[in-house]
Length: 167
Image 1 (cartoon, one colour):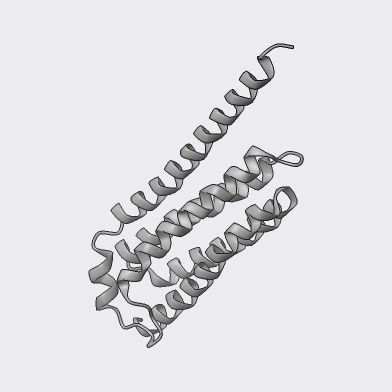
Image 2 (image 1 turned 60 degrees about the vertical axis):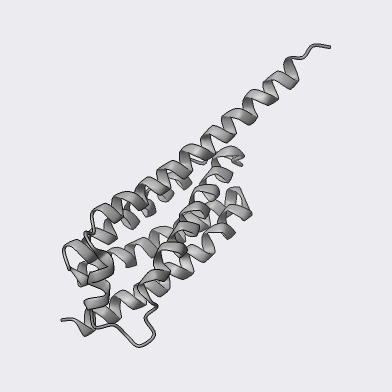
């Protein structure tokens, strides 16, 4: 018996860790790019007419920090142990991430609340497809995206309320 099997397992494990780090870096890069493209989102948010149920501005940072982590881990679970080809699932994951990235500059920098609402609705559709496809590969990956979907649904309602109150 040789040590090839343990060495191979170690290489796979290391590759899996690097993949997770890369996915986390990608998701947090999307967050950083969105933040850079918004200017001073906090001041803009505070200046808007908002529904009475709108959360305080300070809440968004911590919530998104956790959600971007779960978005990355969900993708990692699907790529790491796919049951069948995961390409389609990852294409949809990428689409929802791009729509996520687009929302902040459209809403905050451009002040296009209606277009931002369209974007977030498309994000919800892409996210629903992603969850369904992820569920075929790893149920845990799909479940990790549920809090994200709930938050984006809430954000869509908030976006709509702000759009209606500020037009």
